[in-house]
Length: 372
Image (tube, rainbow, N blue to C red):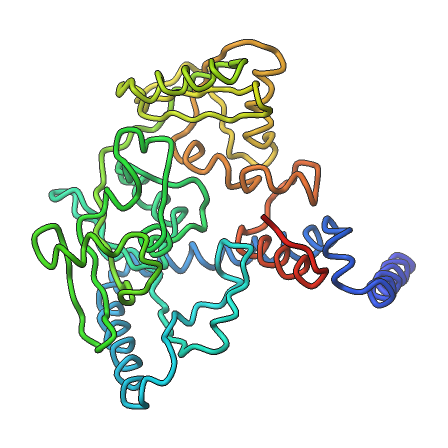
């Protein structure tokens, strides 16, 4: 009974403190409290629900049937907009807090919101070596499925919550882009609902002008409802070589040389000051040396950028074998290096990108701060 009273008193004092200081003050200046007490539990719950749902729908093969219904619903919404006189612009009805961005899109309040609840993987065709996905399927979801059956995307941007739609309509880049190009260059087909409500498929041969105009268009040409993306065979491990480099000219030279070597499946550089960096080169492999395995995605491991910095501080090279999916999402736990600012310590779990950046963006805007 006494512990409960003690806990209750702490909660009351905490709420009074928030009342006096203001919620914006707490979120901006004492963010670790907000992150640890609210964002972390919410992130875990969301992850469990999201991946369980995706797994069930794919295993039950219900995604294609649901997809057709969703496309018809989007077409109906667009045609209704036209019947009402098309008085405002259209935009997706996806709420701002679900996006991986610090920007709060005010246009959502004034434009016609078209609800696009399309977040499933529709088909994996290993004969054609393509995967067909809906626009809100994210990179974490795609790797979880493809890697489990021995396949992967040639270009797979690092953060779990980056969606196919965002990477197509915006852009996406990865440490394998020196070989395969940007995310748009591994896409072979797009399906869009246009402003007249029609459904159009475009490829290099069919509606090729639209196919080449879609990337970087930010949704101005139509609503993406599906994309076909190339897949390649995957191997379970990434052999990663770390090389500290000093001097800006040497950094540029070494990175250029590593990128020109097409035997390197992955090339990445992390720069810690004007003249201090670590260049990393990696290749996929079937086997790993047991004493050099590093499962960097485990919750108790240091954030990846901190781990890499260790080679710079020790001024030594190194080789590790990292599980493929751990490598792909090496920056997810720390959101690159953003989490060191509000938290400053490693966590047992980590907040979802969109929840974290949304709270950061709104709170700083309310405080009159600009994030560049």
